[in-house]
Length: 328
Image (cartoon, rainbow, N blue to C red):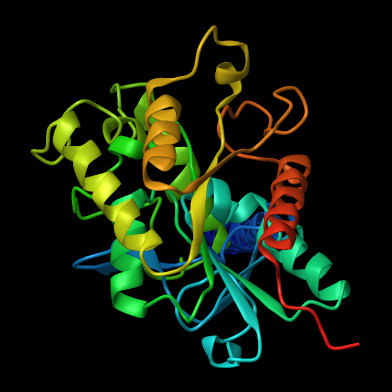
């Protein structure tokens, strides 16, 4: 009888122990999920969609928070917080196209984005103007041209494309990337799952195999079966198409950190400057301080200071081109 009671007690204790472990696991998972979502800003990534011509773009009609930043895309995948239907004939439109430098990515809040800042500043001066941000990470001129072929220019009177050193040879290779870790097409099951799948697993894998990022591979001499010369020709033709859609047009060139101390211009900068001069397009060099205007440990992308400097340049360009003012 005593042995039976001991067996029952052991089972009861084991059951209590298992219950405590399960409870702690649930609590730990809940705390981990809360930290990943609220503390790290995970669980709500902006989504991408594939396109047979553009290659990929951000999914329309998104308003999410990421790392504490608000990320917005309207009905035509612009990084603007108003629908394309508000683009009326009574307002001047400036169309901006580019890659992640213009887009800002998830580390730039909508309110601190150069296009948002510039539009707000110009409208505060009484100018009826909209500055459209048509961009996505690693877009080159061909991606931009295909976006315009699909959606048009929205009646823009001015079109400017933000480019950096490798963009002259950055052409679509149509490698299926939508639905991968970096270009999700659906929300993760949880923030904790995203932390593990998107950030921890790739770092573990990197210990075992040497990987080349898509961004770097797209800057190589040959990409998608296209030679460097052919890629350059395609990019310049795409720029001509984009600039044919508006009377005011040009390139805004953003250097990478090392370019500011290099003895001479990079090949990309030199060729784009010459191309613009030959065809009568404007060429603007975005003046940046390599020590204060780029993100930490990032030689390409702008921090909030850099975004403000890009916004200041946009304001000067639009004012020079003659943005519409409100009637006195």
